[in-house]
Image (spheres, rainbow, N blue to C red):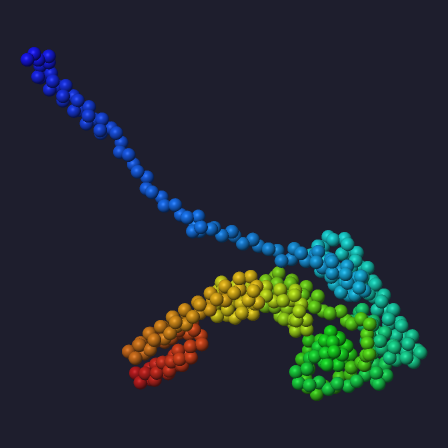
Length: 370
């Protein structure tokens, strides 16, 4: 057999091929496999919640009261119209229309009040006291502080034009106006003619002099508009407890007043939220329960608070039982500590309160012995 290459040469070539193979393997980087990402179904992905946008509760007030002012003027209810323009002006100090209407209406109201007073004087000269009384009352309708009309009604009209009323227990000026005139908004007649404050508490047994009236063409303007304006101002100033007092007073005499209902709901909602932030859950629940259940998310809040209080009650009982065990082991300080936690979680836990008192008495007896 003929050999083309010597065996030594073949060994060298073989060795070189092995080196190339191993070097090539060493220089090829390993293929990295990316971890498989599990695709979350679209319907199960959490939807990011949009931040709640703060709503300006007062943005619509100027336009709303401007419309009311025009409507009141057209119906001849001048004092209500004046008040509505004052509200517009308070929100828009640079509004020229409201400034001009305020000035015009104030002058017109004063003129009407004086006109009715003069008419009353004319009737008195003709010896027509009942007609005079009506005119003086009309003057007060336009200007409740018209001093001359008040003076004539109090002191210069025949006593037969008045009735006597003896106050009963729990009587108020508004209640008397409701009884006598079937209109709580005629409280000013009761108050002014007897030198009383409208909000005064009356003692039983007082004798009041009340004017007899068959009809008055225009009653004193209802004060709910003014009270609502004050209440919303208090709400804006975050004085929610005062705002809700106004709302509830309005609802006593005008239970269908939607604005007063809104104000009441908004005020109690804010009071409840404030207490919730302080973690005063029991009081917070009490406030939220005064809000209409359909208002905002009140239904959900009430349910969550009731569940939380149930959990707290269970925790309170656990701490109470721990206290009992400490007490039986004569570890009085630890027992009292557990019972104090019990009362913090459940202030109505009667046993804990009673046992703290007993443990403190026992401590005092032991101190005297030692």
